[in-house]
Length: 310
Image (cartoon, rainbow, N blue to C red; front, side, top):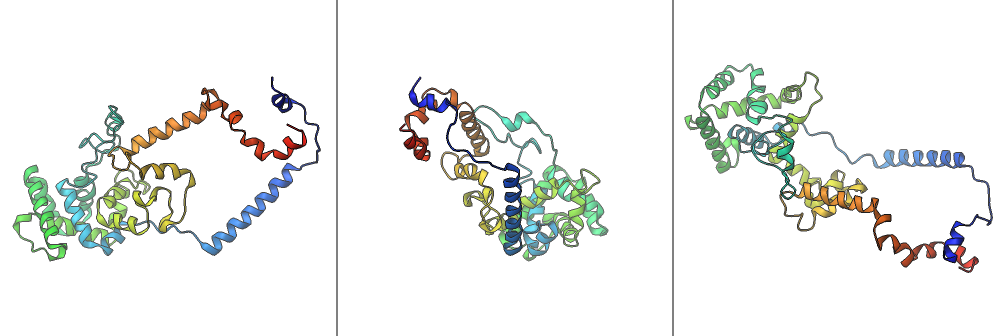
C-alpha cells in the first residue's frame, strides 16, 4: 500500500473546530428564501398564461378554420401521428425496436370526430346541425374530397375569409365556421377538456388540436422554444431554464440526432447509456484509475499535501 493511501486512511490529527450544522442550515434557508422572494418580486416570472382555443380562434381565425378543415381531411399531425393516439403510423423507433408501435394505442384520438364533430353537437345553429348530418351520411371518400378541396382553396386564397364557398366543399365550410364560433365564444375549451372525463382536467384534446395549427408553432418560435432554439431548456422569451436539460438540448443541435426522425428515442437511449457509465464508473477498467493518474485533487488540497510533505 502506497504512502499516500496510508495517509488517506489515517485518523485525522489536524486542527478541529465546532460546527453547528442546524444553525448553518437555518441561516442558509433564510438567506435563500429572502433572495428568491426578492428576485421574484423584482424580475417576476417569464412564464405567460396558457394559450387557449379561444385566444387562437380570435387572434388567427383563418388558421383555426384551416386546421379544422385539416382535421376533417385527416392531414394534420394528430391524424397521422400513430401510437399512443392512433394506428396511422409506426411512430418512434430505436434501430429495429418499434417502441411506439409496441406500446400500442393507449389514448385513442380521432381528430375529425373528437376535435370537430363531437363538439359541434353542442351548437344551437340549425345550419350546423344540418351540415353535420350531411357529413356523417356521406362516404369516407366524399368526406375526404370535400375537406381536401376546401383546404386547397384556403391555401390558394391565403385566408379562409377570402374563399368563395360553393357546393364543391360540401358541408365543410359550415362545420369549420360553426366550430370557430364555439371557440371564439369560449365554449370549445370546456367541451374538449371534458370529452374524456367530466372533470375539466384532461387537456390532451385541446393541446393536440392547438398543436396541429400554425398559430401555436409561431408563438413557440417567437418565445424561443423551438428545438433548434434550445427550447427544451428555455423559459419563455429565451430566459435560462432547466439546467438539467442542457445535455438533452445540446444533442438535438448536432448530427446525427439533428436530422433524425427518431431523435427523441435515440437521445433518450444515449443519455441512459451515459448514465449507466457514471453509475458503473468505479468498476470500469482504466477509468477508475484516472483520479490517480490525473491527481486533480492534489491541486484542490495542495495546502494539506504541502504541509504533510506528500
